[in-house]
Length: 316
Image 1 (cartoon, rainbow, N blue to C red):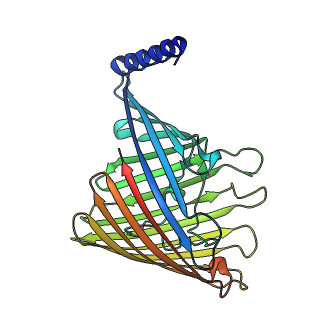
Image 2 (cartoon, rainbow, N blue to C red):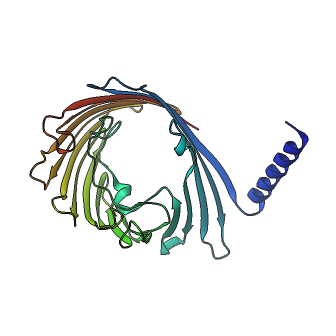
Image 3 (cartoon, rainbow, N blue to C red):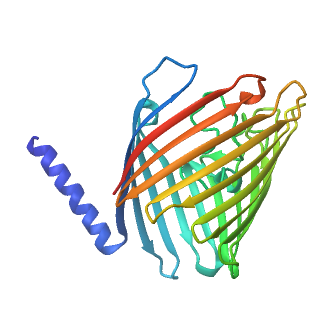
């Protein structure tokens, strides 16, 4: 390393120390994982992959007591285009007034953040099967606002997100909102709804998503139902999922998950998926394995496949 680089790095390090001491707390965390995945009826491709991520967070307190956190996530995986700061956000915690977050990239709206919330030791029941349809989502991406407030009533959190139109592919701005209740021990109930106008220049989709999960001792069960109504003819679909997980010990869990997607289009058959998963935690290391079977992939009758995956992840 030449002297110029040494001087530059020393100056940068000094600046970061100064910021940490006088204006903000800077933290770093991350994870690295190695995975192997495959599926029947498929012979091409290397099943091995690696994914790394580093999260940088800078937090500070304003004169009025509000807290501000800036977060950037550096992701590095096998896809060259993904090796960037793929998530950037600024969050303002206003105490009892709630939390407002602006996400520059990698954001999730209220609906898209829910995903499949039924209990699992590994992945969703349709994961690792090429072409399989997934739960209808909602607005996601960049340059979006998200608000949440858990101070209105014990156990109740309300949230809303707003994604401005890009003036091109998004015909209008997208808005979604939701409520989550956790006021009873072991019970979580959630409901979210909204419109996603980012589906194309002429399409908009109304989404609703509700779920309930309950944990008692080592057992967790969950049910989820999602519906999407599109302005595109015969494009509506309904999603349901059930999951059961059991903690064999403090370190090991197993689960069974099923899901089904029904299509309004009468030419499509219902997609049905079943998955089993197991996970084992050893300090900062987590080992996972799952096997999924999907029938009538994306509505295509008799297009059935099974997929599997194993992974070892390290958190730091």
